[in-house]
Image (cartoon, rainbow, N blue to C red; front, side):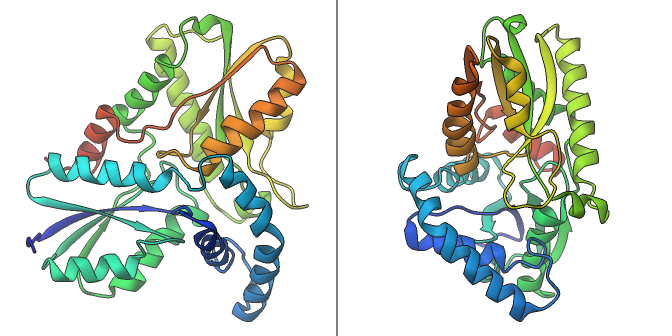
Length: 311
């Protein structure tokens, strides 16, 4: 096995490859203290079991509509493979929070490769306790003091990264002026933001940055706005919801960019591309398109290398 003293580890949530793995994903997610903010581990476990039992079958029906698996796994593997080809002295791995490959598995592999320095790259451009904090803490707990660990800070301000996003948006439609661009971010319960989570603030800043670059490049959409997707349960979530935002665009054209995701997953391929598309058609939206995530685009790979200071 090749020794690799420096390693780059991409951190993400993961996604199900089959129905059993979907149950694993849901079980691990709702047992995460950063997701289900209940102090008692026992109570959290009981709540998690109830949620998983009530949601598993309906969630799997959604997966069946996108090929019985989340696209996040093959797409991340492709990105890891390309980065390994690009980086001469760095080994690149992925560690998922809720499905394999788990952090403890990756730690063992890094130990076998005699890794000393590890760069953690959370695949979340904006920071949230529910994503970045959860994934980073999980890996550090698994690693203990085995490596010197550097954690990459939120990178939504990086110019190359934003050029990659603008490039994706630019190539999604021809007549920009006919479309209303909506940056769709994964929602959060309002109470998490109120407790000090910077996610909403950083999302707003990111939309401003991207809007300025689009204007600079004379890519002029009919309108640019922000909305939040994925609300579940009775709690108040960040607003406006994408459901409500779409109601403004009857007889108009809409382009969605998933601003909180870097790799396509069940929420882009099912929720945005199928579920919300059906809602848009019911409202009377003339044309509804969803941009692909950055995945393994050349500019995104360039941005990762730049953000991590790697050659």
